[in-house]
Image 1 (tube, rainbow, N blue to C red):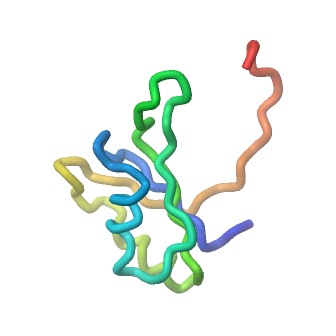
Image 2 (cartoon, one colour):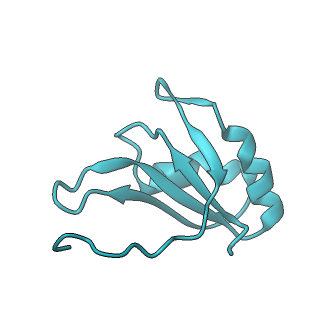
Image 3 (cartoon, rainbow, N blue to C red):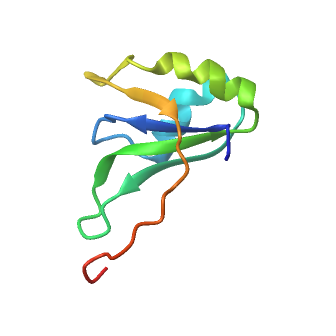
Length: 91
């Protein structure tokens, strides 16, 4: 499990990969920042992930949980491992 990876939820729709990176850059070196997009519409799904170079930076960034960004209180948690889902109904 990557302890440096954080789940960021309740993101404003206007946030993109670059602005997500900028939002968390104050906490340390970021190796990856991605906003998850809907593959059909191309719009943000309102959540993403930020991966830090160090676990220490990720721990510090957890203090962003509940902070207001563009009028929305964001959710910041440690990312959980992706669980492989069975089925998929044609996807």
